Image 1 (cartoon, rainbow, N blue to C red):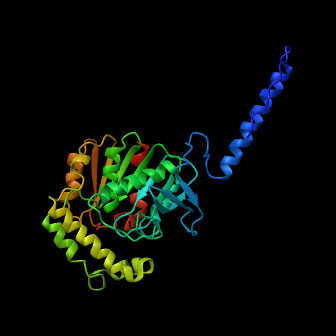
Image 2: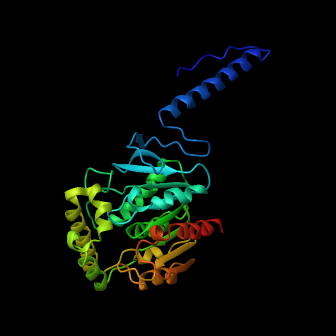
Image 3: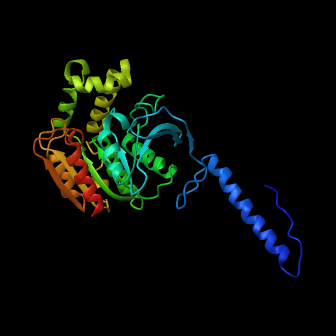
Length: 312
């Protein structure tokens, strides 16, 4: 937009006309930027470093590809008002496989966002890799997505691997995370955990029919090598001393709700108990008959507990 001259006028009439024209140009400029995805709603932040593009439709809500940190992520959002909530999937998980009940249920009172983490689901190619800092990378990706969407502050719901990355995110970005609910995560790995992962390594022999039916359509022949990569990554963490996010957990400033299935075959009870004991402002709730997928099997109860916690 080219500048235009303001004529000198001792009566001020020309100046008033010029100022009115400047206001119209400013309004038009914002409209043009908005059409290109560079201006969000009032109160949100202009973020030219992220790019957005159309993505395949989902029954769970609005979809976009959001490119941040050098990677293109599939993102789903639902809900028109309320505190934003970021749902962080677990290992091999996606927004659609991991958070169907939450994308619908939590959206009654919140703006809910989930995504396919780097290398999973529709956030491919490339396929998932496992550098030593992959949990930290997941945390950085999640925060960058929310910033790109214009959300400076938000709550988190993190499951399994997503819970571990959520703990790191809340520790590193205390100004962004208001409250957090985590379940199925672990701040460290022991040999007992490695044994549990190894018992599931062969997906055709050891995964349930439900799990295979959920993930095979997403990954096809890549499912087994990707799960091998996860199991090997856990062994690598164990070889480096076993720590995932113990130090970060102890530094979290926001209130945290630790939920768990008392009969979780993958994550023993001492893991959620450790989180509840070591996170400064945390409380713990067990589902007596729950396993690893409490948010799915007990979707309505889980959602109510989480929404009540967020409303406190």
